[in-house]
Amino acid sequence: MTGTVVAASGLRRRYADGSRTIDVLRGVSIRVEAGERVAITGRSGAGKSTLANILGLLDVQDEGTYELLGRDTTSLRARERDALRRDAIGFVFQAYHVLGNRSCWDNVHLKLSTARTQASERERLIAAALDSVGLLEHADAPARLLSGGEKQRLAIARATVTTPSLLLADEPTGNLDPDTAGEVLDLLDELAHSGIAVVVITHDRPTARWADRVVELRDGQLAR
Image (cartoon, rainbow, N blue to C red; front, side, top):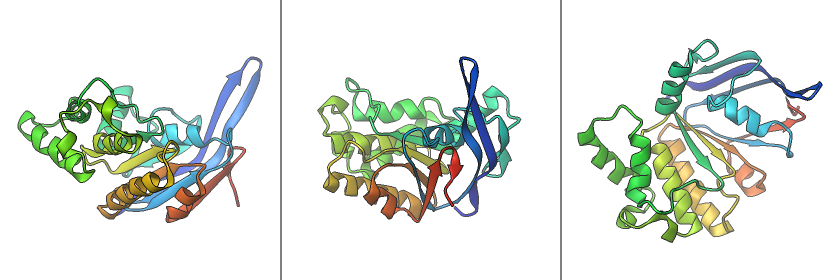
């Protein structure tokens, strides 16, 4: 997988707060190539989550353009945005968001249940995803029995079972000890080497150092 995955230019996002208007993003431009590891850093309130939500097609900018895989997302209808998000983007969060009472297998299957995947292919894809993060032997175990690191690995398996072009990870090492965090970053390395663009939102300095490039936001703008 080669080429530009993310091409955003002049992104602006405003929110109303009573009688005030708050400019959260103020002309942010960013490009991410296939296989690139990018860390987005900045203090709380700098606009990191808002930028991630726009890149993940969970929110829409007020001004500016955003192309994902060369496709202009600005004029997409809601159904088209949902389909592009489903097919092209995987999400990993600090709190894992796995279903504790469901098996590891079921947690990954939930992602495939919304994808255009033939039923005959699902078992192979789920097994491959769990195997890639070292959890195949725990396929039938309830997710609540996993350690924190294992839950994050399960979240990565779920996010990547559809082979997305972009992985957005919000503080993926935030709840982990240093050794386990290193294991998760190793998995993200493997994904980047396979051609997936990996964008990580982080406050963690070791995670930022791991990235190929660091993008710092300050008050809604890129730091110079």
